[in-house]
Image (cartoon, rainbow, N blue to C red; front, side, top):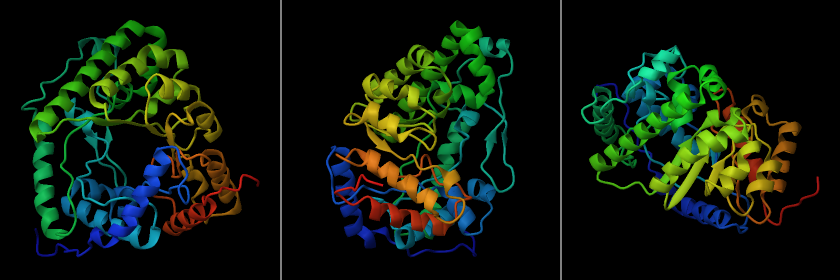
Length: 378
């Protein structure tokens, strides 16, 4: 740790009673019952905190000290000012959306003041045909990531001695979204029509990569994955028939293998056409439906089977919390809230353009509007 490194005394244990209350509220909602109000959980990530406290987002992802400082300051703000229903606070190394790039040896760019991005490695049909999976054990980029985690842990213990630290790991997206990380999404979607057999072979390789990687991390960390969360944004842009044939069976393979005790899914949307498959075939316990899906469609397909999370769209929050945004909050809560099974949130995560005060006002308003019994009249 350098001489100028900050040391933080923030201790989330001070909020233990509030976190226990939030956990009870969320557990009640997850059991499809009504608590005192609809839970309100704002997904606010490191990029948001970095921008809030004046750090360059590129530095947040590339400098461990900045990574820690932004996260600790952000979590302190979340507990003291945002005051949503979060049930814990811990520090985790955030490398950004780069794990496919690391595993499959893609070039990664680090633009100024934004997240890093993967440069697509596969360009042609021949690239897909020749694509081979790398060995996981001894992979130089996987080893680099685990070494980075150790450096993160050591520095976090010094900079934030009262903060819990996550155990770490290395993970990639499920097959379709993984494919769209290392190849142009447009070309991947085109293969659904022009080369479905080759696409299936490609997705099977990426499914195998996910399994090899997860099993390796479990062995290395001395754990066994029994709850699985997946983020599969790219599924929203294919037909239900394509989803059932090419995507859902591979997701089910992962859930059956690693999600015996819990299954969570995120997809930004629009996902209205897939909700029945997600609830009835994948049997997902909880889904962040993103900001572009219809809460009405989600309730029709999933109510009582899958807990619905999210649906507030960032685009409605780039200014003050106005009457239009409040009307949307009321509609989401009145549609999703009755009989439990709904957690109010921004779909996905809060983008850096949303003013912090708007976030605070959004939480306060949703907590008020979500009190049971919910007034379903506008």
